[in-house]
Length: 110
Length: 444
Image (cartoon, rainbow over all chains, first blue to last red):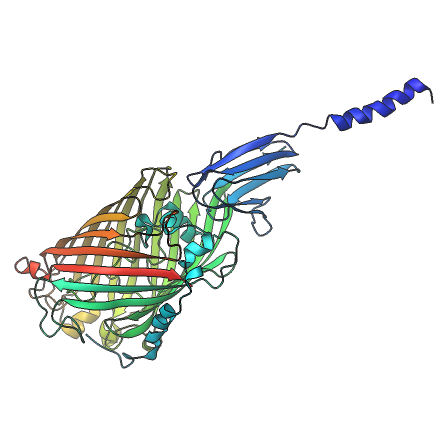
């Protein structure tokens, strides 16, 4: 192999490693027993940060279908705490608070 | 007052013994413990049963909302002590075992299963020792299964309810079971005439119904009730049973409400009602029954001053009007009553809860209907009663920063005044009642 052909083969993978695809974070606030948004659209690999600005606990559930039996449970979130969720697959997700059923957020992951 | 042979049943000791051994470390009312929320999150004035939007959601979703921890079994207890003074003594005593006036009483001691059974199945089951009748009984019961589903692409909640009292399953405090006043003296005279849906079915029926809340806007429910037989009611401790009315056939109950939560304000307007066929005194002359059609309208409005503060001031108003049409075929044969009659009840109340701690309330009420001398147990055969109820309640705990987390207490002063009582204005004030109560609840 000629040296000038070997260079890009070596450098390009390094460049890819040193400049990963940009991962965005969307912040959703929880206050007054409500999410700050009702619908958001993000890209696969993005994160959503849930902040609890209420004076009471919250508990995020993320479900991919109509059924919440296999929902992802982010656990109890005390006042002032934040919790991060990675949405790594495309689709439509329902986000609920297990404690406050009226808190509803739709997440579309493209 | 009719008494049962089980008046001194040892079952009444159960809640008392439970009180004595209540461990304080985990002694939160069971709903609060299950959700990790203080009482004030669900209840106006930080003490039930007046619900805030979150309390209605919790009930709508089958009492199953949870912080994910293990709280099984969700057992809670309640006691209610009182003092009653009426403007005029009641000759012979306010009740058996009680003086004609100025009575202290243990009104109730209750044990509850109140919370989730499975992820989508929950229950509110109350068993009560009635300290005035001195009787242990199964009290209000509402077992629910609820799921969230898209209906026509819109978020909705559907569910099933198995209960023993029409309106015990209702989400709003304008309907009879959970309406104001939330407690009242069992040792004061109360008006004789009331519509059937206004409490007469409690624990005498069992019903299964389905409901849907569509898009947080439209609530519909339909239930079918059957009367419980005398033996079953005896076994469940419903008092009094001997010689009381029995519900026959199936009684359909409906509920339709339009509602919405706008953040600070929430409102509801709706209708509910029931059609029931009843054997007066349990007797069936010539196979005839009395038929009652109760049609009601109701409205609610609540305003939360600061929705970000669980212990915010809250203004609440509730109103209902119940129109009952009566076809008294059986009573006309048995007792010579008029064949047809009607009764209308109107109630409206307002409260301002200050910091979920001090809650003054007022209610105006009116009942009027057709004269029926052989039917109403009133001096002149008229059913009408008018008056007002004033109340000041104090609940020191149940807020996010409360020093005591394991329970709550509600102290209240209530005054009931009558401008007309059982069809008469003269002497109506003799029935005015001062009622002091201490109501405590805690979780095991």
